[in-house]
Length: 296
Image (cartoon, rainbow, N blue to C red; front, side, top):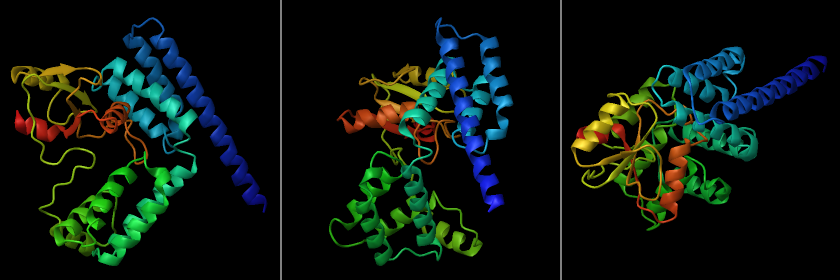
């Protein structure tokens, strides 16, 4: 009993420290952007904050904070964008309770369901129907990834009450993105079965990319080049690169190496805005950087 009480007290203490750390970060961010100028020494203060709170790196959302700060200091992400992303994350932590609410538990449960479904390397009709039933009973997750995507996919599969083999493989490939199986033989079986299936999560699959008179915004860290190189290539193709999302944006390019604000339960700021615009009827297309570079 005594050990449990100590553990509980330690947990509360860590939570209090995490809250204090995020409040201090939020204050630093507000101070940095107060004059609309972001100097290099101000970014160093963020690095010092990250170093001071590194012991929290395994506690969400601190991993995202640390990655974003590190990538900004190394100039992989523009300073202004990074500050806005960090502030957005602070607000998510405070207001949405995305990391410490029942939503997180349910999303983790969904990931566990994914794991259990694929643990034998097969995806049968009964499992798909049971997954559909669980998704129908948890519509409060509708604005969270990957629930929104898997819900849409499963609905399209069961709508005609007939599950085609290609539909089964597409669903298997999608679910496999979120599962780390320990059985190498099962992993190999799934990889072989889905080898010809192209799944990019929220990104369009094999999109037609038109550059002429279209606007493009980039989020995340690119693996095939720098933002400047990509933006120049877009200009040469007749497109217009922009730094922020709006109703006039035609394409949002998703960097391959994971936006630091992107986690299992949380979209990045630009992605979230793009999805909101898309749900409101605007035809913004989310595309993977590889598809854009291939089109160029």
